[in-house]
Length: 171
Image 1 (cartoon, helix red, strand yellow):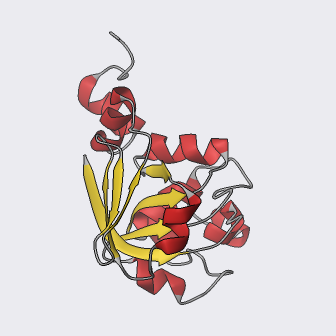
Image 2: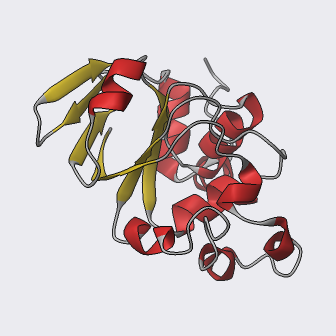
């Protein structure tokens, strides 16, 4: 499975309240409505750079904070194709996979070297990430087959709707 998008760089400890502020999470469950406010407390103009297909490249501990799955859902609705980081909060990582948002752990050297707005390409099956403008390449841990199936389906709920079972059944 291949994913591409323009690089949007962020720093360490991007928490779920920076992704979508708590003041909006309780007003509506309409993810398209919530996506209008993505990263508002970090940079109100950041959302404009996400639409049209982006890949967020962050540093350590992306998605720390609350365990609500609105954060990865909002990122996906805002046009984020994937998130690459040095590390993720465990619950955010799992929630992201569950909603069909690819999250990729990469090394610090690659993360620090890629440039803002550079086109990135990720091959989840092969375990490779490429920065097309600079020619950088990094190895990443390939997704297990069952997680690829979840991502390809658009999330665990979509997978279950389509196949009437979970991807790890019959393994």
